[in-house]
Image (cartoon, rainbow, N blue to C red; front, side, top):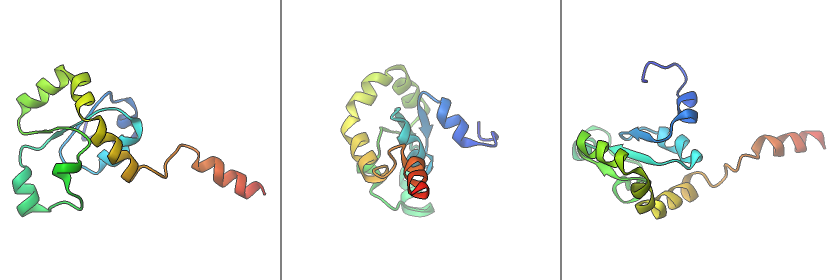
Length: 114
């Protein structure tokens, strides 16, 4: 899927996001659908490569999975995984999606029409 020219299209049709630390998580959070984080290199990424702007390990809106096997198991029991991470997901959306209510264009149009 990485060769697809428009990631937004893929996010709209995906039932679940499986990612590493991609900023796509902020866009996908608007869908309300589950996210799984394949964090096989978490320590290396955090301590050597780039680090994080937020405390990713405590605020990730889904499980941090260390192996492909863990990702597969999470996909098999996605409803239970999503239920276990409801609070983290809600907190993430409140922190990063609070202004995006789906009515921004309507507000702009209303203001322009005045």
